[in-house]
Image (cartoon, rainbow, N blue to C red; front, side, top):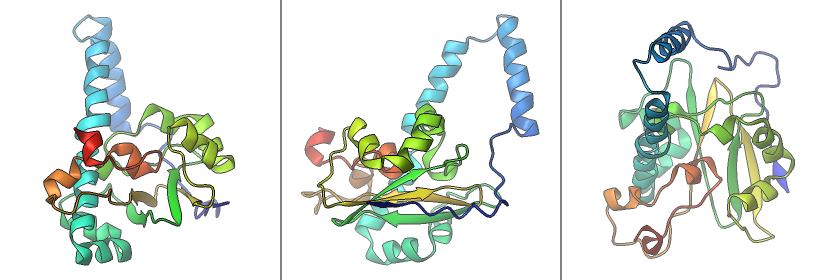
Length: 212
Protein backbone atom coordinates (compact mmCIF):
# COMPACT_ATOMS: atom_id res chain seq x y z
CA UNK A 1 0.00 0.00 0.00
CA UNK A 2 1.33 3.43 -0.82
CA UNK A 3 0.20 7.00 -1.12
CA UNK A 4 1.60 9.40 -3.65
CA UNK A 5 0.41 12.99 -3.21
CA UNK A 6 0.69 15.07 -6.36
CA UNK A 7 0.62 18.69 -5.22
CA UNK A 8 1.77 19.83 -8.65
CA UNK A 9 -1.07 18.32 -10.68
CA UNK A 10 -2.75 21.73 -10.96
CA UNK A 11 -0.73 22.57 -14.04
CA UNK A 12 1.24 25.35 -12.35
CA UNK A 13 4.35 23.31 -11.65
CA UNK A 14 7.51 24.79 -13.15
CA UNK A 15 10.19 22.13 -12.99
CA UNK A 16 13.87 22.80 -13.41
CA UNK A 17 14.16 20.44 -16.38
CA UNK A 18 15.71 23.16 -18.57
CA UNK A 19 19.07 24.80 -18.10
CA UNK A 20 19.06 28.21 -16.48
CA UNK A 21 21.00 30.91 -18.40
CA UNK A 22 23.95 30.42 -16.04
CA UNK A 23 23.87 26.62 -16.42
CA UNK A 24 23.76 27.01 -20.21
CA UNK A 25 26.83 29.26 -20.11
CA UNK A 26 28.69 26.78 -17.91
CA UNK A 27 27.83 23.91 -20.27
CA UNK A 28 28.97 25.92 -23.28
CA UNK A 29 32.23 26.90 -21.58
CA UNK A 30 32.87 23.31 -20.53
CA UNK A 31 32.38 22.15 -24.12
CA UNK A 32 34.81 24.77 -25.46
CA UNK A 33 37.48 24.08 -22.85
CA UNK A 34 37.17 20.32 -23.35
CA UNK A 35 37.50 20.77 -27.10
CA UNK A 36 40.70 22.79 -26.61
CA UNK A 37 42.09 20.11 -24.34
CA UNK A 38 42.26 22.46 -21.36
CA UNK A 39 40.07 20.40 -19.03
CA UNK A 40 39.54 16.69 -18.57
CA UNK A 41 35.89 15.57 -18.53
CA UNK A 42 36.86 12.59 -16.35
CA UNK A 43 38.24 14.96 -13.71
CA UNK A 44 35.03 16.98 -13.79
CA UNK A 45 33.02 13.78 -13.41
CA UNK A 46 35.10 12.87 -10.36
CA UNK A 47 34.44 16.27 -8.78
CA UNK A 48 30.72 15.98 -9.47
CA UNK A 49 30.69 12.49 -7.96
CA UNK A 50 32.37 13.84 -4.83
CA UNK A 51 29.78 16.56 -4.36
CA UNK A 52 26.95 14.17 -5.23
CA UNK A 53 27.83 11.43 -2.78
CA UNK A 54 30.14 12.88 -0.12
CA UNK A 55 30.15 16.64 0.40
CA UNK A 56 26.63 17.68 -0.61
CA UNK A 57 24.62 15.25 1.57
CA UNK A 58 26.58 16.27 4.70
CA UNK A 59 24.24 19.24 5.16
CA UNK A 60 21.21 17.00 5.28
CA UNK A 61 23.00 14.52 7.53
CA UNK A 62 23.57 17.30 10.07
CA UNK A 63 19.88 18.22 9.93
CA UNK A 64 18.87 14.61 10.57
CA UNK A 65 21.41 14.16 13.35
CA UNK A 66 20.16 17.27 15.12
CA UNK A 67 16.58 16.03 14.82
CA UNK A 68 17.61 12.71 16.36
CA UNK A 69 19.46 14.38 19.23
CA UNK A 70 17.18 17.36 19.91
CA UNK A 71 13.43 16.69 20.30
CA UNK A 72 12.64 20.42 20.13
CA UNK A 73 14.45 20.74 16.81
CA UNK A 74 12.72 17.58 15.54
CA UNK A 75 9.34 19.12 16.36
CA UNK A 76 10.33 22.34 14.59
CA UNK A 77 11.57 20.38 11.57
CA UNK A 78 8.27 18.54 11.40
CA UNK A 79 6.22 21.74 11.71
CA UNK A 80 8.31 24.07 9.51
CA UNK A 81 11.20 22.34 7.80
CA UNK A 82 12.06 25.39 5.69
CA UNK A 83 12.74 27.52 8.76
CA UNK A 84 14.39 24.74 10.76
CA UNK A 85 16.79 23.89 7.94
CA UNK A 86 17.54 27.57 7.31
CA UNK A 87 18.41 28.01 11.00
CA UNK A 88 21.41 25.75 10.40
CA UNK A 89 22.55 27.87 7.47
CA UNK A 90 21.29 25.65 4.68
CA UNK A 91 19.05 27.98 2.71
CA UNK A 92 17.18 26.62 -0.30
CA UNK A 93 17.02 28.14 -3.75
CA UNK A 94 14.55 30.96 -4.24
CA UNK A 95 10.95 29.72 -4.10
CA UNK A 96 11.92 26.35 -2.65
CA UNK A 97 10.17 25.14 0.47
CA UNK A 98 11.13 22.06 2.44
CA UNK A 99 9.04 19.42 4.14
CA UNK A 100 10.57 16.77 6.39
CA UNK A 101 8.86 13.39 6.50
CA UNK A 102 9.80 11.06 9.35
CA UNK A 103 10.16 7.31 9.00
CA UNK A 104 8.50 5.29 11.76
CA UNK A 105 8.12 1.59 12.53
CA UNK A 106 4.77 1.80 10.71
CA UNK A 107 5.66 3.97 7.69
CA UNK A 108 8.60 4.29 5.33
CA UNK A 109 8.85 7.39 3.14
CA UNK A 110 10.22 7.52 -0.39
CA UNK A 111 10.82 10.65 -2.47
CA UNK A 112 10.56 10.98 -6.24
CA UNK A 113 9.89 13.68 -8.79
CA UNK A 114 7.64 12.15 -11.41
CA UNK A 115 7.90 14.91 -14.01
CA UNK A 116 11.62 15.67 -13.92
CA UNK A 117 14.16 15.77 -11.09
CA UNK A 118 13.23 18.36 -8.46
CA UNK A 119 15.56 17.74 -5.54
CA UNK A 120 16.54 19.49 -2.28
CA UNK A 121 19.95 20.73 -3.40
CA UNK A 122 20.49 22.80 -0.25
CA UNK A 123 20.58 19.70 1.95
CA UNK A 124 21.45 16.85 -0.41
CA UNK A 125 23.80 18.41 -2.94
CA UNK A 126 23.58 17.17 -6.53
CA UNK A 127 20.87 14.67 -7.47
CA UNK A 128 22.13 11.19 -8.35
CA UNK A 129 21.79 10.07 -11.95
CA UNK A 130 19.24 7.37 -11.08
CA UNK A 131 16.94 9.92 -9.41
CA UNK A 132 16.52 11.63 -12.77
CA UNK A 133 16.00 8.40 -14.73
CA UNK A 134 12.50 7.77 -16.15
CA UNK A 135 12.56 4.21 -14.79
CA UNK A 136 12.96 5.41 -11.20
CA UNK A 137 10.47 8.25 -11.62
CA UNK A 138 7.74 5.88 -12.81
CA UNK A 139 8.50 2.74 -10.84
CA UNK A 140 8.88 4.54 -7.51
CA UNK A 141 5.16 5.32 -7.77
CA UNK A 142 3.98 2.10 -9.41
CA UNK A 143 6.11 -0.38 -7.45
CA UNK A 144 7.89 1.34 -4.54
CA UNK A 145 8.46 -1.91 -2.66
CA UNK A 146 10.15 -3.42 -5.69
CA UNK A 147 12.33 -0.34 -6.16
CA UNK A 148 13.39 -0.44 -2.52
CA UNK A 149 14.27 -4.12 -2.85
CA UNK A 150 16.56 -3.26 -5.75
CA UNK A 151 18.32 -0.76 -3.48
CA UNK A 152 18.73 -3.52 -0.90
CA UNK A 153 16.00 -2.25 1.42
CA UNK A 154 13.74 -5.13 2.49
CA UNK A 155 10.86 -3.85 4.61
CA UNK A 156 8.37 -5.91 6.62
CA UNK A 157 5.27 -6.76 4.62
CA UNK A 158 3.09 -4.70 6.92
CA UNK A 159 5.27 -1.57 6.68
CA UNK A 160 3.38 1.11 4.76
CA UNK A 161 5.33 2.91 2.04
CA UNK A 162 4.40 6.50 1.36
CA UNK A 163 5.66 8.11 -1.84
CA UNK A 164 6.15 11.86 -1.96
CA UNK A 165 6.25 13.68 -5.30
CA UNK A 166 8.65 16.63 -5.21
CA UNK A 167 8.02 19.86 -7.05
CA UNK A 168 9.99 23.02 -7.72
CA UNK A 169 7.96 24.66 -4.96
CA UNK A 170 8.04 21.86 -2.37
CA UNK A 171 10.85 19.41 -1.81
CA UNK A 172 11.11 16.62 0.70
CA UNK A 173 13.73 15.39 3.14
CA UNK A 174 13.28 11.93 4.63
CA UNK A 175 14.32 11.67 8.28
CA UNK A 176 15.25 8.00 8.70
CA UNK A 177 14.72 6.15 11.95
CA UNK A 178 17.56 6.51 14.41
CA UNK A 179 19.54 3.26 14.55
CA UNK A 180 19.64 1.22 17.74
CA UNK A 181 22.76 1.45 19.86
CA UNK A 182 23.39 5.15 19.20
CA UNK A 183 22.23 6.56 22.53
CA UNK A 184 25.69 7.75 23.56
CA UNK A 185 26.66 9.38 20.25
CA UNK A 186 26.85 13.13 19.74
CA UNK A 187 25.48 14.92 16.69
CA UNK A 188 28.76 14.70 14.78
CA UNK A 189 28.92 10.93 15.21
CA UNK A 190 25.22 10.56 14.43
CA UNK A 191 25.62 12.49 11.18
CA UNK A 192 28.16 9.91 10.02
CA UNK A 193 25.36 7.32 10.04
CA UNK A 194 23.09 9.30 7.72
CA UNK A 195 23.47 8.51 4.02
CA UNK A 196 22.14 10.39 1.03
CA UNK A 197 19.95 7.44 0.06
CA UNK A 198 18.44 7.31 3.56
CA UNK A 199 17.35 10.94 3.14
CA UNK A 200 15.69 10.12 -0.20
CA UNK A 201 14.16 6.96 1.21
CA UNK A 202 16.02 4.47 -0.95
CA UNK A 203 18.20 3.50 1.98
CA UNK A 204 18.32 3.27 5.75
CA UNK A 205 20.61 4.94 8.25
CA UNK A 206 23.75 2.99 9.03
CA UNK A 207 24.21 1.22 12.34
CA UNK A 208 27.39 1.98 14.31
CA UNK A 209 28.64 -1.46 13.28
CA UNK A 210 28.03 -0.72 9.60
CA UNK A 211 29.95 2.53 9.94
CA UNK A 212 33.00 0.68 11.26
